[in-house]
Length: 116
Image (cartoon, rainbow, N blue to C red; front, side):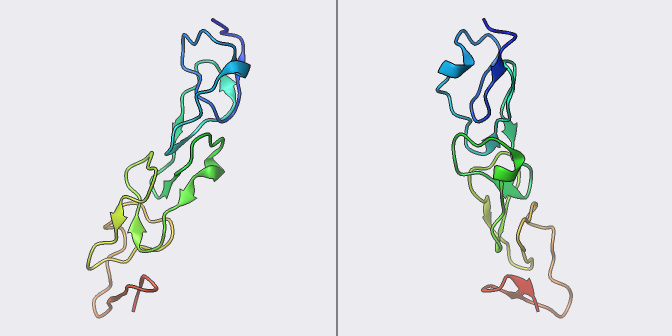
């Protein structure tokens, strides 16, 4: 075990790993990012309101803001969770689907996903 080695960014290095970090081929899983760290480093889930469709991402900035018209809840998503429900609008980076209710007297423009 190489407890004093640094795990390179973009790969998973779980505790008890018996390989040198430069030989690791386990890319960081989708929905997460893996910053450089010690060999006990675990993948970090992309936060609510974001997702990550790619393996091997290295930092929080690699998490993509949720697509307008969709919501991204919970953490660690590889794609938006679903379409914005009726009665709500979901701008860029929306977390919970019920975050933005349409105000009274307004409706959601599906193409712009804004309340009008």
